[in-house]
Length: 482
Figure 1: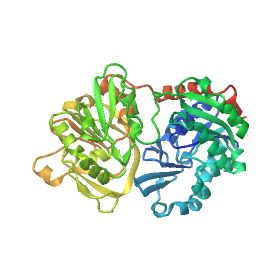
Figure 2: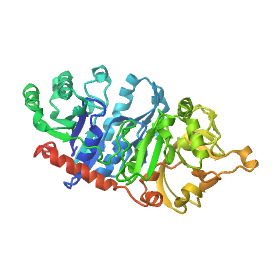
Figure 3: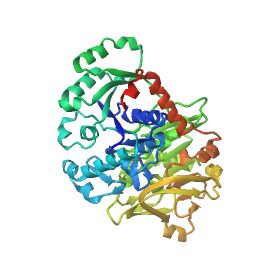
Figure 4: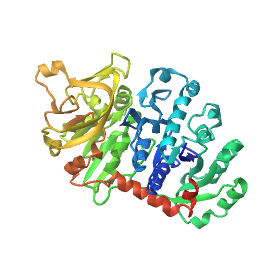
Protein backbone atom coordinates (compact mmCIF):
# COMPACT_ATOMS: atom_id res chain seq x y z
CA UNK A 1 0.00 0.00 0.00
CA UNK A 2 1.65 3.24 -1.11
CA UNK A 3 -0.87 5.86 0.07
CA UNK A 4 -0.78 7.69 3.36
CA UNK A 5 -4.25 7.93 4.87
CA UNK A 6 -5.66 11.03 6.53
CA UNK A 7 -9.07 10.60 8.18
CA UNK A 8 -11.61 13.22 9.25
CA UNK A 9 -13.77 12.18 12.21
CA UNK A 10 -16.48 14.26 13.85
CA UNK A 11 -17.88 14.57 17.34
CA UNK A 12 -21.39 14.74 15.80
CA UNK A 13 -23.14 14.71 12.45
CA UNK A 14 -22.91 18.15 10.90
CA UNK A 15 -19.60 18.98 12.57
CA UNK A 16 -17.93 19.66 9.22
CA UNK A 17 -16.43 16.33 8.15
CA UNK A 18 -17.50 16.48 4.50
CA UNK A 19 -16.45 20.10 4.09
CA UNK A 20 -13.02 19.51 5.66
CA UNK A 21 -12.44 16.29 3.71
CA UNK A 22 -13.14 18.13 0.46
CA UNK A 23 -10.74 20.92 1.41
CA UNK A 24 -8.01 18.40 2.29
CA UNK A 25 -8.48 16.63 -1.05
CA UNK A 26 -7.82 19.84 -2.96
CA UNK A 27 -4.97 20.88 -0.63
CA UNK A 28 -3.03 17.66 -1.15
CA UNK A 29 -3.81 17.60 -4.87
CA UNK A 30 -2.25 21.07 -5.15
CA UNK A 31 0.94 19.60 -3.75
CA UNK A 32 1.22 17.47 -6.89
CA UNK A 33 0.11 14.28 -5.09
CA UNK A 34 -2.25 11.62 -6.44
CA UNK A 35 -5.24 11.92 -4.11
CA UNK A 36 -8.47 9.95 -3.69
CA UNK A 37 -11.37 10.37 -1.24
CA UNK A 38 -13.00 7.47 0.58
CA UNK A 39 -16.03 6.99 2.81
CA UNK A 40 -16.83 3.37 3.58
CA UNK A 41 -20.52 3.94 4.28
CA UNK A 42 -22.62 6.99 3.60
CA UNK A 43 -26.28 7.44 4.51
CA UNK A 44 -27.73 10.03 2.15
CA UNK A 45 -30.32 10.56 -0.55
CA UNK A 46 -27.90 12.88 -2.30
CA UNK A 47 -26.26 10.65 -4.92
CA UNK A 48 -24.32 11.03 -8.17
CA UNK A 49 -23.84 8.75 -11.16
CA UNK A 50 -20.24 7.59 -11.71
CA UNK A 51 -18.46 4.73 -13.43
CA UNK A 52 -20.02 1.56 -12.03
CA UNK A 53 -23.23 3.05 -10.58
CA UNK A 54 -23.95 5.64 -7.89
CA UNK A 55 -22.13 7.07 -4.87
CA UNK A 56 -22.89 9.76 -2.30
CA UNK A 57 -22.70 13.30 -3.66
CA UNK A 58 -20.12 14.30 -1.04
CA UNK A 59 -17.63 11.73 -2.30
CA UNK A 60 -18.34 12.77 -5.89
CA UNK A 61 -17.40 16.37 -5.05
CA UNK A 62 -14.40 15.19 -3.03
CA UNK A 63 -13.12 13.25 -6.03
CA UNK A 64 -13.41 16.34 -8.23
CA UNK A 65 -11.59 18.35 -5.55
CA UNK A 66 -8.84 15.70 -5.57
CA UNK A 67 -8.64 15.98 -9.39
CA UNK A 68 -9.53 12.30 -9.55
CA UNK A 69 -12.13 10.45 -11.63
CA UNK A 70 -15.04 9.56 -9.32
CA UNK A 71 -15.76 5.83 -9.02
CA UNK A 72 -17.75 3.49 -6.80
CA UNK A 73 -14.76 2.47 -4.65
CA UNK A 74 -14.74 5.97 -3.15
CA UNK A 75 -18.08 5.26 -1.42
CA UNK A 76 -18.56 1.50 -1.64
CA UNK A 77 -21.63 1.38 0.62
CA UNK A 78 -24.46 3.90 0.18
CA UNK A 79 -27.63 3.75 2.28
CA UNK A 80 -30.55 5.68 0.78
CA UNK A 81 -33.33 6.17 3.39
CA UNK A 82 -36.82 5.38 2.10
CA UNK A 83 -38.52 5.59 5.53
CA UNK A 84 -37.46 6.18 9.13
CA UNK A 85 -36.70 2.46 9.54
CA UNK A 86 -35.80 1.36 6.02
CA UNK A 87 -33.04 2.14 3.51
CA UNK A 88 -32.14 0.99 0.04
CA UNK A 89 -28.60 -0.45 0.16
CA UNK A 90 -26.22 0.27 -2.71
CA UNK A 91 -23.00 -1.79 -2.68
CA UNK A 92 -20.23 -0.81 -5.10
CA UNK A 93 -22.68 1.28 -7.08
CA UNK A 94 -25.50 -1.24 -7.44
CA UNK A 95 -28.70 -1.80 -5.45
CA UNK A 96 -28.47 -5.00 -3.37
CA UNK A 97 -32.00 -6.16 -2.41
CA UNK A 98 -30.64 -8.84 -0.04
CA UNK A 99 -28.62 -6.35 1.97
CA UNK A 100 -31.57 -3.95 1.94
CA UNK A 101 -33.65 -6.56 3.77
CA UNK A 102 -30.89 -7.51 6.22
CA UNK A 103 -30.80 -6.20 9.79
CA UNK A 104 -28.37 -3.32 10.39
CA UNK A 105 -26.02 -5.17 12.73
CA UNK A 106 -25.99 -8.24 10.52
CA UNK A 107 -24.67 -6.37 7.51
CA UNK A 108 -21.16 -5.68 8.78
CA UNK A 109 -19.66 -9.12 8.19
CA UNK A 110 -21.18 -9.26 4.71
CA UNK A 111 -19.99 -5.85 3.51
CA UNK A 112 -16.61 -5.41 5.25
CA UNK A 113 -14.54 -7.41 2.72
CA UNK A 114 -15.84 -5.23 -0.13
CA UNK A 115 -15.28 -2.02 1.85
CA UNK A 116 -11.74 -2.95 2.85
CA UNK A 117 -10.95 -4.14 -0.66
CA UNK A 118 -12.08 -0.86 -2.19
CA UNK A 119 -9.90 1.11 0.23
CA UNK A 120 -6.90 -1.11 -0.42
CA UNK A 121 -7.25 -0.63 -4.18
CA UNK A 122 -7.38 3.15 -3.77
CA UNK A 123 -4.31 3.09 -1.51
CA UNK A 124 -2.37 1.05 -4.05
CA UNK A 125 -3.05 3.59 -6.81
CA UNK A 126 -2.60 6.90 -4.96
CA UNK A 127 -0.19 8.85 -2.76
CA UNK A 128 -2.83 10.08 -0.29
CA UNK A 129 -6.31 8.83 0.55
CA UNK A 130 -8.46 11.29 2.49
CA UNK A 131 -11.08 9.32 4.45
CA UNK A 132 -14.31 10.66 5.89
CA UNK A 133 -15.97 9.09 8.90
CA UNK A 134 -19.68 9.14 9.71
CA UNK A 135 -21.55 10.53 12.69
CA UNK A 136 -19.25 10.05 15.66
CA UNK A 137 -16.63 7.34 16.34
CA UNK A 138 -17.80 7.28 19.97
CA UNK A 139 -21.20 5.73 19.21
CA UNK A 140 -20.29 2.89 21.53
CA UNK A 141 -23.58 1.06 20.94
CA UNK A 142 -22.41 0.52 17.33
CA UNK A 143 -18.71 -0.05 17.97
CA UNK A 144 -18.79 -3.82 17.47
CA UNK A 145 -20.56 -3.50 14.11
CA UNK A 146 -18.64 -0.40 12.96
CA UNK A 147 -17.53 -0.39 9.32
CA UNK A 148 -17.10 3.34 8.73
CA UNK A 149 -15.15 4.93 11.60
CA UNK A 150 -12.42 3.38 13.74
CA UNK A 151 -12.44 -0.01 12.02
CA UNK A 152 -11.49 1.84 8.84
CA UNK A 153 -8.96 3.98 10.74
CA UNK A 154 -7.28 0.89 12.18
CA UNK A 155 -7.27 -0.91 8.83
CA UNK A 156 -5.58 2.04 7.14
CA UNK A 157 -3.52 3.15 10.15
CA UNK A 158 -4.91 6.57 9.31
CA UNK A 159 -3.82 9.78 10.96
CA UNK A 160 -7.08 11.22 12.22
CA UNK A 161 -8.42 14.72 12.79
CA UNK A 162 -11.38 15.09 15.15
CA UNK A 163 -13.57 18.06 14.20
CA UNK A 164 -16.33 19.64 16.30
CA UNK A 165 -18.92 22.36 15.69
CA UNK A 166 -18.11 24.96 18.33
CA UNK A 167 -21.14 27.07 17.31
CA UNK A 168 -23.40 24.46 18.93
CA UNK A 169 -21.73 24.84 22.32
CA UNK A 170 -20.06 22.15 24.39
CA UNK A 171 -17.24 21.70 21.89
CA UNK A 172 -14.51 20.90 24.42
CA UNK A 173 -16.70 18.35 26.18
CA UNK A 174 -17.49 16.79 22.78
CA UNK A 175 -13.80 16.49 21.93
CA UNK A 176 -12.74 15.17 25.32
CA UNK A 177 -15.72 12.83 25.67
CA UNK A 178 -15.20 11.34 22.20
CA UNK A 179 -11.51 10.76 22.91
CA UNK A 180 -12.24 9.28 26.36
CA UNK A 181 -14.75 6.74 25.03
CA UNK A 182 -12.32 5.29 22.48
CA UNK A 183 -10.05 2.32 23.28
CA UNK A 184 -6.39 3.20 23.81
CA UNK A 185 -5.21 1.91 20.42
CA UNK A 186 -7.82 4.03 18.65
CA UNK A 187 -7.04 7.16 20.68
CA UNK A 188 -3.46 6.87 19.43
CA UNK A 189 -4.65 7.43 15.85
CA UNK A 190 -6.05 10.91 16.63
CA UNK A 191 -3.43 13.52 15.78
CA UNK A 192 -5.31 16.79 16.07
CA UNK A 193 -8.48 18.52 17.20
CA UNK A 194 -10.27 21.01 14.91
CA UNK A 195 -12.72 23.67 16.13
CA UNK A 196 -15.12 24.49 13.29
CA UNK A 197 -17.66 27.33 12.82
CA UNK A 198 -16.07 29.63 15.41
CA UNK A 199 -17.46 33.14 15.86
CA UNK A 200 -15.72 35.72 17.99
CA UNK A 201 -12.27 36.42 19.41
CA UNK A 202 -10.06 33.33 19.25
CA UNK A 203 -8.08 34.61 22.24
CA UNK A 204 -11.11 33.77 24.40
CA UNK A 205 -10.59 30.05 23.76
CA UNK A 206 -7.62 29.93 26.14
CA UNK A 207 -6.88 28.02 28.28
CA UNK A 208 -9.14 25.25 26.92
CA UNK A 209 -6.90 24.01 24.06
CA UNK A 210 -3.93 23.75 26.43
CA UNK A 211 -6.04 21.91 29.01
CA UNK A 212 -7.16 19.44 26.31
CA UNK A 213 -3.55 18.92 25.30
CA UNK A 214 -2.56 18.20 28.92
CA UNK A 215 -5.39 15.70 29.38
CA UNK A 216 -5.17 13.93 26.02
CA UNK A 217 -1.79 14.70 24.49
CA UNK A 218 -3.57 15.93 21.35
CA UNK A 219 -3.05 19.49 20.05
CA UNK A 220 -5.79 21.72 18.65
CA UNK A 221 -4.39 22.22 15.16
CA UNK A 222 -7.01 24.59 13.72
CA UNK A 223 -9.73 27.02 14.67
CA UNK A 224 -11.87 27.59 11.57
CA UNK A 225 -14.01 30.74 11.60
CA UNK A 226 -17.68 30.53 10.60
CA UNK A 227 -17.99 30.70 6.79
CA UNK A 228 -21.54 30.74 5.49
CA UNK A 229 -21.02 31.04 1.75
CA UNK A 230 -18.11 28.78 0.85
CA UNK A 231 -20.13 27.48 -2.13
CA UNK A 232 -19.98 23.75 -1.40
CA UNK A 233 -23.31 21.90 -0.99
CA UNK A 234 -23.89 20.68 2.54
CA UNK A 235 -24.01 16.92 3.10
CA UNK A 236 -27.05 16.45 5.34
CA UNK A 237 -30.62 17.69 5.17
CA UNK A 238 -32.12 20.99 4.09
CA UNK A 239 -29.10 22.89 5.16
CA UNK A 240 -29.81 26.60 5.10
CA UNK A 241 -33.07 28.42 5.68
CA UNK A 242 -31.54 31.88 5.28
CA UNK A 243 -33.10 33.76 2.38
CA UNK A 244 -30.02 35.63 1.20
CA UNK A 245 -29.12 36.80 -2.28
CA UNK A 246 -26.10 38.59 -3.70
CA UNK A 247 -27.35 42.10 -4.52
CA UNK A 248 -30.97 43.08 -5.15
CA UNK A 249 -33.36 40.11 -5.35
CA UNK A 250 -34.71 39.69 -8.88
CA UNK A 251 -36.02 36.10 -8.59
CA UNK A 252 -37.26 34.11 -5.59
CA UNK A 253 -37.15 30.34 -6.01
CA UNK A 254 -39.06 28.18 -3.51
CA UNK A 255 -38.04 24.50 -3.36
CA UNK A 256 -40.59 22.21 -1.70
CA UNK A 257 -38.70 20.52 1.15
CA UNK A 258 -40.54 17.25 1.65
CA UNK A 259 -39.20 14.65 4.12
CA UNK A 260 -37.62 12.29 1.55
CA UNK A 261 -36.13 15.03 -0.61
CA UNK A 262 -33.22 13.76 -2.69
CA UNK A 263 -30.35 15.36 -4.58
CA UNK A 264 -30.92 18.72 -2.91
CA UNK A 265 -27.25 19.53 -3.49
CA UNK A 266 -28.07 20.32 -7.14
CA UNK A 267 -29.66 23.59 -5.98
CA UNK A 268 -26.44 24.99 -4.50
CA UNK A 269 -25.69 27.00 -7.70
CA UNK A 270 -28.94 28.93 -7.21
CA UNK A 271 -27.55 30.17 -3.89
CA UNK A 272 -24.52 31.49 -5.76
CA UNK A 273 -26.26 33.28 -8.67
CA UNK A 274 -26.48 37.06 -8.14
CA UNK A 275 -30.03 38.26 -7.50
CA UNK A 276 -31.51 34.81 -6.80
CA UNK A 277 -33.03 34.07 -3.39
CA UNK A 278 -33.52 30.39 -2.54
CA UNK A 279 -36.27 29.45 -0.05
CA UNK A 280 -37.01 25.98 1.37
CA UNK A 281 -40.80 25.66 1.48
CA UNK A 282 -42.57 23.46 4.04
CA UNK A 283 -45.86 25.38 4.28
CA UNK A 284 -48.07 27.29 1.83
CA UNK A 285 -46.91 30.53 3.46
CA UNK A 286 -43.34 29.73 2.42
CA UNK A 287 -44.49 29.73 -1.22
CA UNK A 288 -46.09 33.16 -1.06
CA UNK A 289 -44.32 35.66 -3.29
CA UNK A 290 -42.14 33.07 -5.02
CA UNK A 291 -41.49 33.55 -8.71
CA UNK A 292 -40.75 29.85 -9.22
CA UNK A 293 -41.87 26.73 -7.38
CA UNK A 294 -39.65 23.66 -7.70
CA UNK A 295 -40.70 20.14 -6.80
CA UNK A 296 -37.34 18.38 -6.33
CA UNK A 297 -36.39 14.71 -6.43
CA UNK A 298 -37.74 12.28 -3.86
CA UNK A 299 -36.54 8.91 -2.61
CA UNK A 300 -40.16 7.86 -2.08
CA UNK A 301 -42.45 9.85 -4.35
CA UNK A 302 -45.85 8.60 -3.12
CA UNK A 303 -44.97 9.23 0.54
CA UNK A 304 -43.71 12.74 -0.15
CA UNK A 305 -46.75 13.45 -2.29
CA UNK A 306 -49.00 12.44 0.61
CA UNK A 307 -47.00 14.74 2.93
CA UNK A 308 -47.31 17.58 0.43
CA UNK A 309 -51.10 17.19 0.41
CA UNK A 310 -51.26 17.01 4.20
CA UNK A 311 -49.49 20.38 4.43
CA UNK A 312 -51.84 21.98 1.89
CA UNK A 313 -48.92 22.49 -0.47
CA UNK A 314 -50.82 20.78 -3.31
CA UNK A 315 -53.26 23.70 -3.32
CA UNK A 316 -50.38 26.20 -3.16
CA UNK A 317 -48.70 24.59 -6.19
CA UNK A 318 -52.01 24.46 -8.11
CA UNK A 319 -52.76 28.13 -7.34
CA UNK A 320 -49.25 29.16 -8.39
CA UNK A 321 -49.62 27.30 -11.69
CA UNK A 322 -53.14 28.69 -12.27
CA UNK A 323 -51.69 32.21 -12.08
CA UNK A 324 -49.39 31.31 -14.98
CA UNK A 325 -46.29 31.33 -12.79
CA UNK A 326 -43.33 29.00 -13.26
CA UNK A 327 -43.44 25.46 -11.84
CA UNK A 328 -40.60 22.96 -12.30
CA UNK A 329 -40.60 19.29 -11.31
CA UNK A 330 -37.33 17.36 -11.24
CA UNK A 331 -37.34 13.55 -11.31
CA UNK A 332 -39.73 12.64 -8.46
CA UNK A 333 -41.15 16.16 -8.79
CA UNK A 334 -41.93 15.45 -12.46
CA UNK A 335 -43.73 12.27 -11.41
CA UNK A 336 -45.82 14.23 -8.87
CA UNK A 337 -46.91 16.74 -11.51
CA UNK A 338 -48.59 14.01 -13.58
CA UNK A 339 -52.00 12.38 -13.25
CA UNK A 340 -51.09 9.08 -11.62
CA UNK A 341 -48.38 6.89 -10.07
CA UNK A 342 -48.65 3.17 -10.86
CA UNK A 343 -46.47 0.72 -8.94
CA UNK A 344 -46.84 -2.91 -10.08
CA UNK A 345 -43.63 -4.04 -8.32
CA UNK A 346 -44.07 -2.49 -4.87
CA UNK A 347 -41.23 -0.02 -5.43
CA UNK A 348 -42.79 3.29 -4.45
CA UNK A 349 -46.57 3.17 -4.12
CA UNK A 350 -49.67 3.99 -6.15
CA UNK A 351 -51.60 7.22 -6.06
CA UNK A 352 -53.03 10.20 -7.90
CA UNK A 353 -50.68 12.97 -8.98
CA UNK A 354 -51.21 16.73 -8.89
CA UNK A 355 -52.68 16.75 -12.38
CA UNK A 356 -50.64 19.64 -13.77
CA UNK A 357 -49.21 17.55 -16.63
CA UNK A 358 -51.21 14.90 -18.57
CA UNK A 359 -48.70 12.15 -17.77
CA UNK A 360 -48.64 8.81 -16.01
CA UNK A 361 -45.62 7.23 -14.26
CA UNK A 362 -45.12 3.46 -13.95
CA UNK A 363 -42.41 2.30 -11.52
CA UNK A 364 -40.09 -0.31 -13.01
CA UNK A 365 -38.28 -2.96 -10.96
CA UNK A 366 -34.99 -1.90 -12.56
CA UNK A 367 -33.41 1.43 -11.66
CA UNK A 368 -32.18 3.81 -14.35
CA UNK A 369 -28.75 5.11 -13.32
CA UNK A 370 -26.82 6.98 -16.01
CA UNK A 371 -25.21 10.21 -17.08
CA UNK A 372 -27.08 11.86 -19.93
CA UNK A 373 -26.44 14.53 -22.55
CA UNK A 374 -29.50 16.11 -24.14
CA UNK A 375 -30.83 19.23 -25.83
CA UNK A 376 -34.08 21.04 -25.16
CA UNK A 377 -36.42 21.41 -28.10
CA UNK A 378 -38.72 24.39 -28.48
CA UNK A 379 -40.26 25.57 -25.21
CA UNK A 380 -42.94 28.20 -24.65
CA UNK A 381 -43.88 30.66 -21.93
CA UNK A 382 -41.82 30.87 -18.73
CA UNK A 383 -39.25 28.38 -19.97
CA UNK A 384 -38.78 29.65 -23.54
CA UNK A 385 -35.20 30.74 -22.75
CA UNK A 386 -34.21 27.06 -22.56
CA UNK A 387 -35.17 26.42 -26.20
CA UNK A 388 -32.30 24.74 -28.03
CA UNK A 389 -30.02 24.69 -24.96
CA UNK A 390 -27.72 21.66 -24.76
CA UNK A 391 -27.20 20.26 -21.28
CA UNK A 392 -25.73 17.36 -19.39
CA UNK A 393 -26.96 15.79 -16.19
CA UNK A 394 -27.69 12.46 -14.57
CA UNK A 395 -30.67 10.15 -14.04
CA UNK A 396 -31.49 8.08 -10.93
CA UNK A 397 -35.07 6.79 -11.04
CA UNK A 398 -37.31 3.72 -11.11
CA UNK A 399 -40.23 5.54 -12.71
CA UNK A 400 -40.88 5.66 -16.45
CA UNK A 401 -43.16 8.51 -17.53
CA UNK A 402 -45.35 8.81 -20.64
CA UNK A 403 -48.46 10.55 -21.96
CA UNK A 404 -51.69 9.57 -20.22
CA UNK A 405 -53.41 7.46 -22.91
CA UNK A 406 -57.01 8.55 -22.28
CA UNK A 407 -56.10 12.21 -21.93
CA UNK A 408 -53.97 12.11 -25.06
CA UNK A 409 -56.88 10.54 -26.96
CA UNK A 410 -59.04 13.44 -25.80
CA UNK A 411 -56.49 15.94 -27.08
CA UNK A 412 -54.82 16.85 -23.78
CA UNK A 413 -51.18 16.31 -24.70
CA UNK A 414 -47.96 17.46 -23.04
CA UNK A 415 -45.10 18.67 -25.23
CA UNK A 416 -42.09 16.34 -25.13
CA UNK A 417 -39.39 19.01 -24.97
CA UNK A 418 -36.57 16.46 -24.58
CA UNK A 419 -37.04 13.17 -26.46
CA UNK A 420 -37.24 9.82 -24.72
CA UNK A 421 -39.59 10.91 -21.96
CA UNK A 422 -36.95 13.08 -20.26
CA UNK A 423 -38.81 16.41 -20.17
CA UNK A 424 -42.37 17.62 -20.69
CA UNK A 425 -44.18 20.97 -20.78
CA UNK A 426 -47.86 21.87 -20.45
CA UNK A 427 -49.81 23.70 -23.14
CA UNK A 428 -49.75 26.99 -21.21
CA UNK A 429 -45.97 26.84 -21.04
CA UNK A 430 -45.48 27.53 -17.35
CA UNK A 431 -45.20 23.94 -15.99
CA UNK A 432 -42.07 21.96 -16.89
CA UNK A 433 -41.05 18.49 -15.71
CA UNK A 434 -37.60 17.02 -16.28
CA UNK A 435 -35.94 13.73 -15.30
CA UNK A 436 -32.41 15.12 -15.49
CA UNK A 437 -30.73 16.08 -12.23
CA UNK A 438 -28.00 18.70 -12.33
CA UNK A 439 -29.93 21.22 -14.42
CA UNK A 440 -28.65 24.22 -12.47
CA UNK A 441 -25.10 22.90 -12.43
CA UNK A 442 -24.91 23.37 -16.20
CA UNK A 443 -23.47 26.82 -17.08
CA UNK A 444 -25.51 27.00 -20.30
CA UNK A 445 -28.76 26.56 -18.37
CA UNK A 446 -27.85 29.23 -15.80
CA UNK A 447 -26.87 31.64 -18.56
CA UNK A 448 -30.14 31.05 -20.42
CA UNK A 449 -32.34 31.44 -17.35
CA UNK A 450 -30.53 34.17 -15.42
CA UNK A 451 -28.03 35.72 -17.84
CA UNK A 452 -25.42 34.96 -15.22
CA UNK A 453 -23.32 32.16 -13.80
CA UNK A 454 -22.33 30.71 -10.45
CA UNK A 455 -18.70 30.23 -9.42
CA UNK A 456 -17.22 27.08 -10.90
CA UNK A 457 -16.72 24.07 -8.66
CA UNK A 458 -12.99 24.32 -9.27
CA UNK A 459 -12.97 27.84 -7.85
CA UNK A 460 -14.97 26.62 -4.84
CA UNK A 461 -12.47 23.80 -4.18
CA UNK A 462 -9.52 26.19 -4.39
CA UNK A 463 -11.28 28.53 -1.97
CA UNK A 464 -11.69 25.68 0.54
CA UNK A 465 -8.02 24.75 0.26
CA UNK A 466 -6.95 28.38 0.68
CA UNK A 467 -9.10 28.57 3.81
CA UNK A 468 -7.60 25.61 5.64
CA UNK A 469 -4.08 26.57 4.59
CA UNK A 470 -4.70 29.93 6.26
CA UNK A 471 -6.20 28.61 9.49
CA UNK A 472 -4.35 25.37 10.24
CA UNK A 473 -1.23 25.56 12.39
CA UNK A 474 1.94 25.84 10.28
CA UNK A 475 3.16 22.42 9.22
CA UNK A 476 0.10 20.57 10.56
CA UNK A 477 -1.25 19.49 7.18
CA UNK A 478 2.15 18.28 6.01
CA UNK A 479 2.73 16.40 9.26
CA UNK A 480 -0.38 14.29 8.61
CA UNK A 481 1.25 12.67 5.56
CA UNK A 482 4.93 12.72 6.57
